[in-house]
Image (cartoon, rainbow, N blue to C red; front, side, top):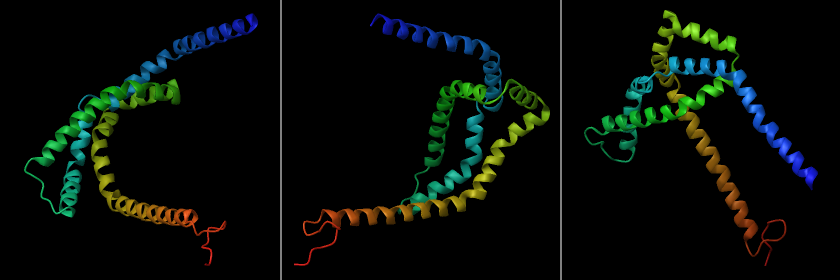
Length: 185
């Protein structure tokens, strides 16, 4: 028993010491990863990205309301946009600290240096500034395909779930034999 306690104690010491050593070695990479995140997602960037998607969001809201036979009240899309902006900014504030370790664990220090150099350059800043426009255009290009994709997935899933319900109902029927078929009476 004493030997087991010593092994457990040694394992706990090793487990708690290893991350400290690892974190000390990864500190420069983590700092660089945080810098990359700040370049890519400065305060207000999420609002700018949402703004680029606004026309598509308003169109989707109008279509959804029309399908339900409703008319959007005045200011509804503006209020939705404000709520989304506030929630997105809040989410990103909490998310950004969790993104840096992912970058630090995935990218080498040299790769992070390249990204920092890119984002510090006029071309890199220009690319970052154009990302919302690219996102908006990609959304426009993909919108029809995504609608078709979503409908096809929903239809296929509904058919399969209905088939499973029917098979399950047949198997649970009191007149069903062991093969799930109805016993002749």
